Image 1 (tube, rainbow, N blue to C red):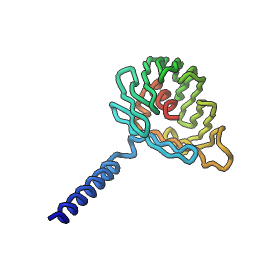
Image 2: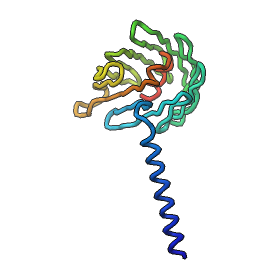
Image 3: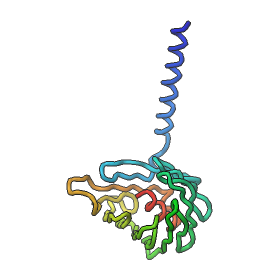
Image 4: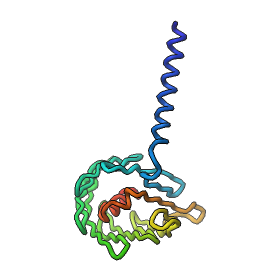
Length: 181
């Protein structure tokens, strides 16, 4: 009897692992913001209510983002052309505007200067003393290129944006990219 209960427990454990893997497969790539940066790959799952991933748990509330990123509390107010708030004790004061088909953001984010341009053709970001110059491989969806802080032998950075991200406001798009990078 003891042997059968151990086998049963092991079987239940295997089923739990398989169910978890199945759940991961069931999560569509269409709701994932994908990042491949300096030999590190991660995805952020974006739903109408939140954005989650490794060290990234942010709730999407009307006009605000709240949660935690890398153990720092995040409280951001998203206005028409401004993002204000805090990440930990660092201040966020970001100007965001839409110019034609491009989202442009400039100001202070996490207590440091940032600059972002997101268009269907390119994604250029200056954040944490590093400049990303990415060109669209798939217009408005997948961007690939180099970072200024990488050595020459590093693989290119690749960022993939899902429909849910593209449907978000310019202020939310800029905030999520800057939080992730």
